[in-house]
Length: 72
Image 1 (cartoon, rainbow, N blue to C red):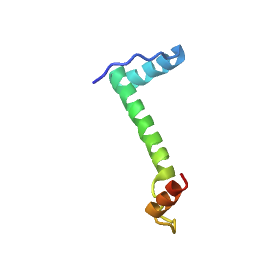
Image 2: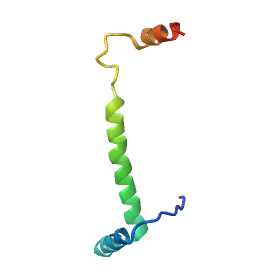
Image 3: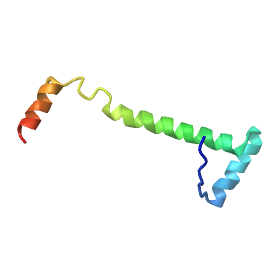
């Protein structure tokens, strides 16, 4: 596990302290969960834009690639 240094505004530190107290969990665990949720949300959003991009195309991907390279 790596250790990182992050600067947070005082307001976020205070709100984090409230969550930590309410959940009775270590601050590091709450921060790890928040980062994991952020990564999962953005990974899904990024993948949704490109996943299956060629699925509805009528052109074979390899042929398309070869045509583009032939222009060089």
